[in-house]
Length: 529
Image (cartoon, rainbow, N blue to C red; front, side, top):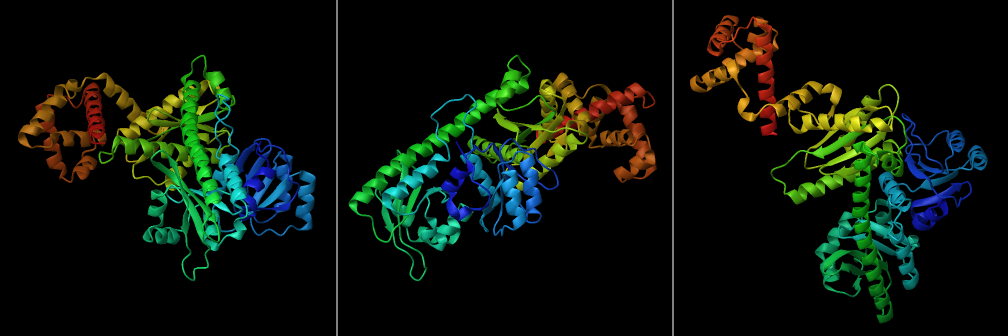
């Protein structure tokens, strides 16, 4: 069970400290980021991250207590006054201070890992990200020294208590969850990583002269021939044979946890995707699947995310980037609403975002734009936003509309990355109509004759006809768009009508011509995208 007591035990005073209130043993019901402009819905016993919250803390704590929150985290330093102490005592909300310099995103990620619910099928015995912190504490107890566990890119995975005994580089690593770049570069230049990766025993790393840093012992974490990461221990001298053996055995345990975590994450993604697919499919299992995902019978919007194809990328690179974006998308939607659900189904990541009221679709579109503005990708992410579903039974229709909007974006018909179906319904209808017409049957009739004439004589009668139709027959406007004199435009238009054998005064003929020209543009954009 993940309680506030366990959070402080795992993270220690390096990241969090108690300001006021009692440390509850109740399980944390969820982690929610406070948004002063759009108040999020709180699950029971929520831990609220008060980003940018400094004033009127007592009033805010009282309000959180009325909404059933368990705790509040604000940026340090916090000096509790009498009003805050009284509000914390009456509301039952515990106030914690988050160390300056540490990113909120890292704290949110660590808390969500620690409070993860496990796989939706209720399987037991799977490794949790929080378990690695317990392993780090156990190693620290065995070696009587502070410990960190890092991945191949020197990103912090877990750390033990007693980090206050280490040096500034270690403290900075804890705060940013990343070893300082300058320190990593020095270790690479000194060949430290090569020595660690070549040896199956701990390697002693002496400090730089006059750096103020403490020496360390490090060992590689292996799964067969694959290097998964490293364990670092702050020690004053090289480890003796007994302690080296202990760290070697501990590295096997850490390797097992890292492999479990990777397998567990893939398994959870797959099972969640299966549940989400069933919930959005509208079949007999949809209601039960939605319940197991935590979705309620409430208004919601389905969003669909994918990446544009890139010829320069290999399928493996595209797949890895798609998975990374899907994970980031899931975290972004969770920050927008704690009961949102997402999963990767095929090559599309679908998200269900509970929203209600007027402007819900505009709000979902804004959330999509915010995600694309924050996420970095060498590929081009695209998001289709579905129509608002009034309840759980309408999620299938919302998914269909999101897929239709996403298809327009993937076809390259419009130069944008987010689309709501109501904004691109004409393009979506044209794509569906294009599916019904064989490739060889477009163009046909007058349009085919004009296209053939243009190819043979290097003319632009087709563009002239298109400009005239787009301008609703306004020759002045159409000639301006073509950058030609009106008289020249009239001549070309008469020539197009004669070559194609089309009566421009016939509404049906104009409609047929316009539809064919639009379909040709849609197919051309699809080939070039």
